[in-house]
Amino acid sequence: MHTNTDSWLISNFKNGNEKALAILIERHQKEIFTFIFYKLMDETLANDIFQDTFMKIIITLKEGRYKEEGKFVLWAKRIAHNLVIDHFRLKAKHNKVSETSYDNEEFSIFDLIAVQEENIEEQLVSRQIKEDLMKMLEYLPENQQEVIKLRFFDGLSFKEIAEQTDSSINTTLGRVRYALINLRKIMGEHQIVLTR
Image (cartoon, rainbow, N blue to C red; front, side, top):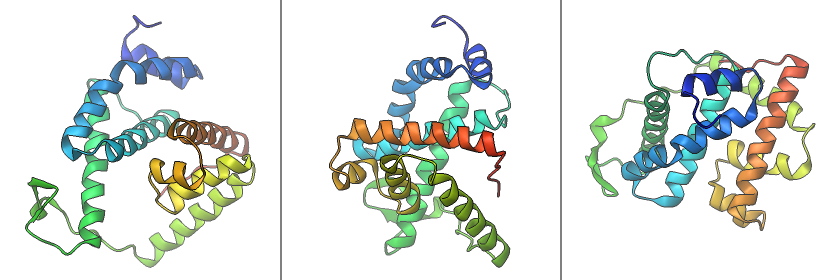
């Protein structure tokens, strides 16, 4: 299986073979992590963005929204790049806006596009998604519920979650991963679709 193409692995993962995804991640993790790290120059933050990138990839593949328009690794890097931009956007919203951010002199405030506030309809949809997600969380073991709430509702980093739950980063990552796998199963069983 290790010698198969990315396309073959993606297709097998879509058909329920979780091992195919593990091989795909293993194959590209160094390149994608390095790509993220050099944009941020912060290992902890790069780890968080890396995990979020693969969560987005997993969800997109599971929902059948991946369109093969070139190399998988380029698509993965595009997702990572967008998450890095989101991080800087969020930071700019919280910090006093200056022409360049001191963490990264190459990053100019002009790279940011104004973040649009959600309109009433979007707020209602967001609330509905949150409510659906909260209902689904009840099906998870308590430790998985906790990490999902801390990560996706409170916006904590994996390092902060590990400290707050008195666990190692690996245990935290494992819990988030298993929680997401379980949530996908619950979504499948209950035919829930979270779309915006």
